[in-house]
Image (cartoon, rainbow, N blue to C red; front, side, top):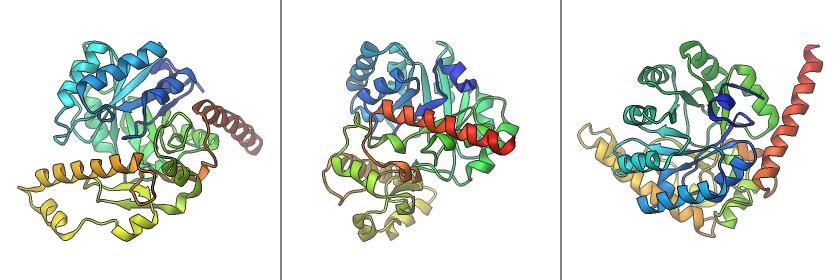
Length: 327
């Protein structure tokens, strides 16, 4: 399973454990690294710059293998610049940028040879970040958990491969080894996989959050704009059905006003983060839990080692089956 991503990051398998807000922790990052994949943790999972520094040092004390930091680079993240330079000082292996312009991250990272991968949902933005010097793009498709794109992987991956010369990593809708094979067959250089790891034993989210990922399936995933103002996938629990998935009239009007829109998005984003923070650690279903359709394949709580091993075994079986079909 050697690809451009494994070569770029120096990992055994072409998989990034996707950064998940208030889910990914340092223990998960270490376990991912020690099992041949690259974990990435949101900088915002640490409340302060001091906690971010302590977290990175903790990871480095337990593994010398690659890991990354996810940076939100729009105006909603007032700590973005401090997070960037702290990570540069401490020396992480790569960044994944989301929800804004990665120009400064790319410029500063190049000085230290740190790789930058950028979330994209369509061709034009992918080309823009390539022109800025990005080392790869995370192609967020319409099956992604959390903030999702509009285009299915079957269209998005080949389109980006035609448009860009840098590696394309598929994000969304994969929870099996056969799914990994299908993305590589489309031309992806690797995958970013998140939802299958929410209920891993190393995760410290609430038991009920993990249980929801096990008990619910792909048909129970809903899209809401309440959390951040942008479309985001969540588990359609009874509580979500009660509160609805659309912004209220005031939120909607603010977001349509050109002068107030950016401020409204900041407020909505902040409110959404607080909702998710409560949901991630409150032992109740009356919360909002982010997840994607790939929870369909989560049947029990497993270690990251077991999840990665399952992916490998399923991949080999799928490859053998494919070879039988094509002769």
